[in-house]
Length: 129
Image 1 (cartoon, one colour):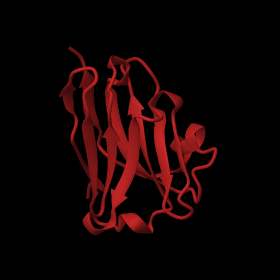
Image 2 (cartoon, one colour):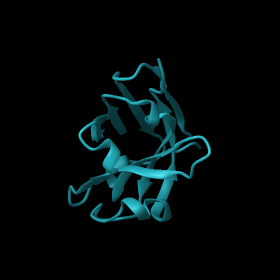
Image 3 (cartoon, one colour):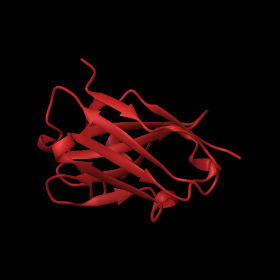
Image 4 (cartoon, helix red, strand yellow):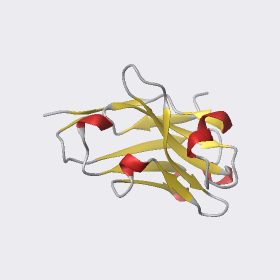
């Protein structure tokens, strides 16, 4: 069973917005320690973008997305989100959601990939005019 169903990616012009969604399936998202989003641009390694701890509320985001991207979740919908505003061409990538085995997101951004419980299948985001 696929743990997540991702949606919301697509083609958007620079300065536009997208909201990515990841609906959890077969497990309860709020029982996870933390949730996170990753991205992988063409020819680059996958990198952590944003992390939210469901235990202590801590968040951490990659410097280039601070003030533009917001991670959140809706327990009633068993879904996590990444709201992306003021998109730039350099945000073009495949975006992946994940649950993380980490009680806090403080200092976790560089280590997120090592503590993933479940991965989403990825959704393409292309920012281009």
